[in-house]
Length: 250
Image (cartoon, rainbow, N blue to C red; front, side):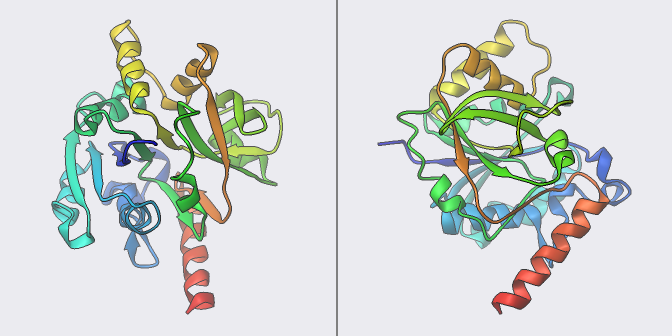
């Protein structure tokens, strides 16, 4: 059986592409139908994934996040915070900063600017990490620009054979989403990557490195809506989707 999951929410970035909104508000705190996106993550982790302990990695405007969520009690979870003082090291460094709080447990990593709505992410959290070092959701999409803003995925069944961050050419119509279930030993591998002299590392690239070194990485077929809140247009699309869902579902 897998260890209990700990939620990890990297929220250190400054959200340059979502300006002017991010001049006064962290992108993880964007109100989507009246609720900050990070709160949507907390609700999803608590209600559908069974996660009640969460680590939030802070950076840009981190004080506003911590003052809003405090210790997490009012949201039915327990929150620990850690500050990323080296944003130039890439978001893999933010993930690594959560390692001391995991105490050897597996992690569910969800970026603060990933929007999920009416998904099967509860099933995602039950993926068997005895067989896979890491797992992430994928979805077929019609718009290739969505993949180019995230990462492309090549797979054989549920097993992933290649990932490319911000690809120029696309092997298929699979969009990779930056939410990962990772086994505890993966964090040790990540620490070793930085100890070996890596000065900057994107987490998607790190997972692709794991594949090349022989790790088994899995792909989970996600249903429902997903939007990367990386610009003004995507924020407006998330607002529209959330409001429409609320009206349709009462």
